Image (cartoon, rainbow, N blue to C red; front, side, top):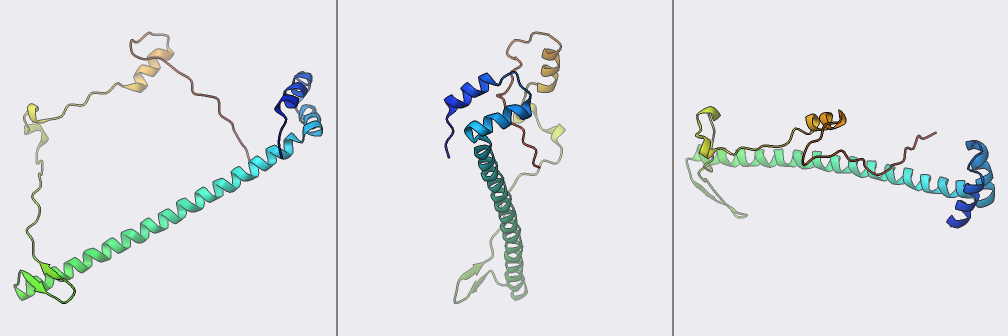
Length: 158
């Protein structure tokens, strides 16, 4: 199903001063535009349902992955316990060799206020909400301006 946009534009121009219900009834009678709109909306709603379904599936797999990661940590603890109880540093098994390894060295900051400033990252960023408020009040701020995004549509399902 195709829309003749030139015809749509021509009819819309002729009907520009009539009430909305009459406008759409007449335009649909001449062009079947509402059939096209309904087909687009049906496809859009189906697409949203598929998006939601995929998000749900992704969340389910994320939950499963977390459960498997937890299970894997339990296996590591069990192997470490066997190493500890047997007082060994290595297990020579048929499927793999399990070895005790020293923990990774990492940094722990115990008091940030005692760290010298040359060893700190300083991040400055504009206070966007304060800047926006001032611009809305008519003030001029170099390097900032208010912009408006492109038009969007609103759809309320029946």
